[in-house]
Structure formats: structure tokens, C-alpha cells
Image (cartoon, one colour):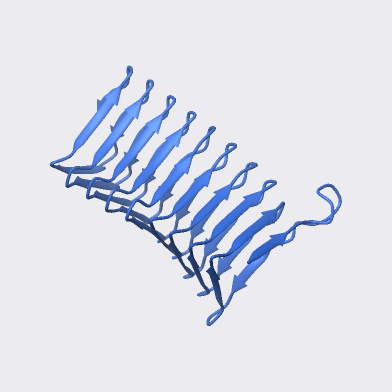
Length: 231
């Protein structure tokens, strides 16, 4: 099945949004393809989105917004956000990914704040290119298990601030290329274990500041190309 959502005119019409909102509201995608041009995909107010063997493409400056105790589950699925839009999680939203990919490009970012959680396993991947960042703040958490990866290239950072937590375990990794850095500050913490990796290349650094903490067990921190590891 293919769902296509477009504005009537990119210049004259208001953006059209695909919205799931409210307790008991469920969007279930199975072997489906969803295209959204110049509009947003929104999951909010305790709604549930499930995706299996499906793909989502959001472009033309559209965003994906997950908020207000909503839950989203991606299994062997993919989501691409290009044209300047972001993936944003806030106010206790939860996103779970298994063997799935979320890719954001064209200066867009992945942003999580206000008690949100994002969990990846079985080669789950977050990928940000062309200037955007992966940013967690305000008591949010990112869990990467079983060969999962968070990767930023093109000058952006992986940033944890304000009592956030990262758990990277089971051959999983955070990787930054193109001058960006991995940054933890303001009582944030990272646990890197079981053959996992923090890797920064091309002049970026790994920095822990302002009472941030790091636990490393049987894993590696690599900085290549002129950067530093700073505590």
C-alpha cells in the first residue's frame, strides 16, 4: 500500500499534516509506503504508531513530531526526512527501533527533550547528514543495543545536555565525521560497554564537562584527525 500526501501548491497552500492524536488512536503500517511532501507526520497525546516492513519519506521542509506520551514502534522499517525538516521527540514520547533506519539530511536534526526515550536494537540506525545534529536534553535517554549506530556527518554534533543518559552496548556505536564532536554536559551520563565504540574523525572531539560522567567497559573511545578527549 502507498500513501501519498501533498500540498496543492508548494507556494500557496498551507501544509497538510498526517496526524494521529489521542488515547486509543492507532496507526498501523505493514509493508506500506508513505510519502509526505511539505507537511508533517505527527504522533501525539498517547497515540500509537506501529510500522513493520514499511517506509516513510518526508520532504519539502516537513517534520516528524512525536509528543505527549505517544509511542512509536519501527520494525524492519525506514524513515527519510530531507529538505530541512527534523525528527522531534518531546514531552515523554517514546520511539523504539528494531533493525530500522531513520535518516535526516539537508541541515535537519534529530531532537529529543523533556523526558523522552529512544531505543534502538538489532542494527537500528540514526543517521544525520549535511550539517544537522543528534541532540538530547532535559532528562531524555538514548539506548543503543545489538550493533546499533548513531552517526552524524557534515559538521553536526552528538549532544547530550541537562541530565540526559546514553547507554551504548553490544557492539553499538556513536560516530561523528566532518568536524563535529560528541558532547556531554550538565549532569548527563554515558555508559559504553560490551565491545562498543565512540568514534570522532576530521578534527572533532569527545568532551565531558559540567559534572557529566562516563563509564567504559571493554569498549573504545577513538579520536582521529586532530581532535581530543577532554574531561
